[in-house]
Amino acid sequence: MHGRQAYKLKLVESNGTVNYFLLDTKTYLILQQIVVTKNVETGQSSKSTTTFSNYTNVRGVLLALDFVVVSDQGTNAITTESLKTDEELTDAFFTKSGYRAAK
Image 1 (cartoon, rainbow, N blue to C red):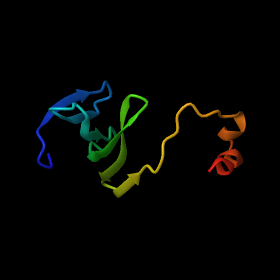
Image 2: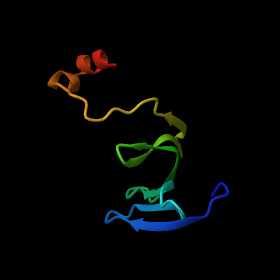
Image 3: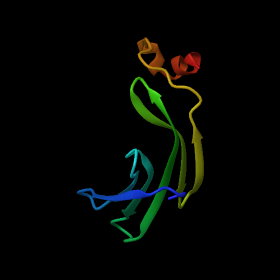
């Protein structure tokens, strides 16, 4: 994948959803996740592919900061600008107005 060797791991959930994880053979980081779901009513399958990149060390854990999700609905790119850990959060943060104020 993108010039890197990868292991392909298949996970089938009890509801029939199939997940494929492509793991870097050297770092074991997830490079890509492919999810195939089947609509029980129509029998149609849908697929989404998420590509992970820009891993960074956050308190000893490597986290992907960038994601690209491609699905039947289109493509979305997600870029994380900053991560904070062990932040003090009040109950107000979990309200709509509190969330806006925290930005």
